[in-house]
Amino acid sequence: MWVMIVSFVAGLILIIVEVPSILRRKERNELWVFSTLLVIGIGLSIAKGLNWSTLNPLDVLNFIYKPISDFIISLLE
Image 1 (cartoon, one colour):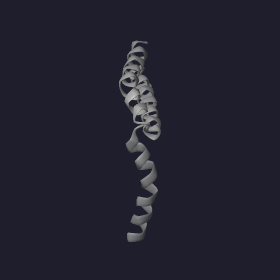
Image 2 (cartoon, helix red, strand yellow):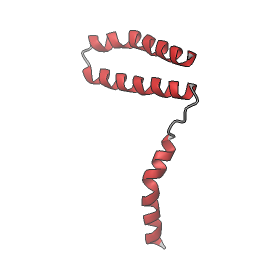
Image 3 (cartoon, one colour):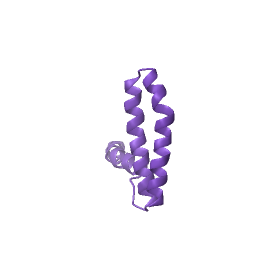
């Protein structure tokens, strides 16, 4: 429970500090990227804090490149 509260408070502090300057510069795309990454970060932080299993980025890369690697190796043999 504390993990969720701390994650939300940290996210709220980041929003309070960063969003006004982004809005003053009228950079809507940067605001979308910031918001998306913040939501992903808070979600992953909560998941890790609650000991939920999270996806490892290396597993995704391995899933994508393993068939390609196998194909290239079969061509070279």
